[in-house]
Image 1 (cartoon, one colour):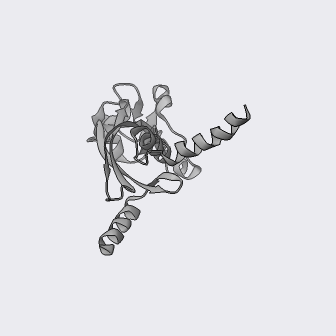
Image 2: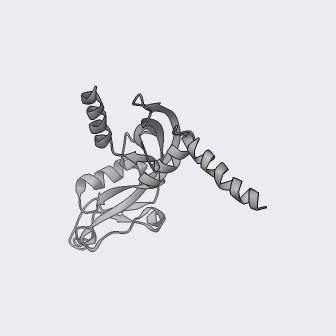
Image 3: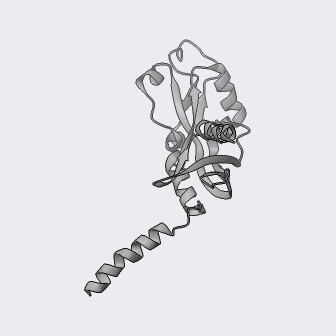
Length: 188
C-alpha cells in the first residue's frame, strides 16, 4: 500500500506533464458560454409615446395578435395615456424597467434568446500553437416580438480568440489577439 502511495504521485505528474496542449471543442465551448453568458435575452426598447414605434407595432400585427393596444387618435380623455399599452398577453415578454425608463414611457421587451450553437473549427494561429481562433455559430430564437427587429438572422458565425498560458487555455479579446499577432510578426 505504501509503495502505491509513492507511485501514484509519480503517475499524476507524468499525466499532467504529458497532457495535450491542443484546444479541444469541449474546453472552447465551455469558455465561450461562460464569457458570453449564453443563453442571453435579446431585448428591444419600445418608446410607448413615439408615433413611429406605434406605427411599427401596427404594421407588425402585434395589435391583432392581442399583445398591444394602440391609441390611433389622441383626444382629451386619453391625453395622459401612452400611444402603446401592453396587454396581459404580453406580460411574459416584458422586461424590468428602471424608474427613468418608466418616466419616459420606455418598455423593454424580450424578443428572443441568443444561444451558443456549435463550434465550426479551431485553428492554431501561431507556429508554436499557443494561440487559437475558434469559429462558432450563435443561434437566435425569436419570439412573437421578434418582428420588431427585422433582419435578425437565425444564426450567425462568430470568432473567439484563445491563448495558451501556464494555467491552460484562456479566452482573450480580439484586440489583444491582434496585438500579440503583430508582436509575433515583428519578432520574425
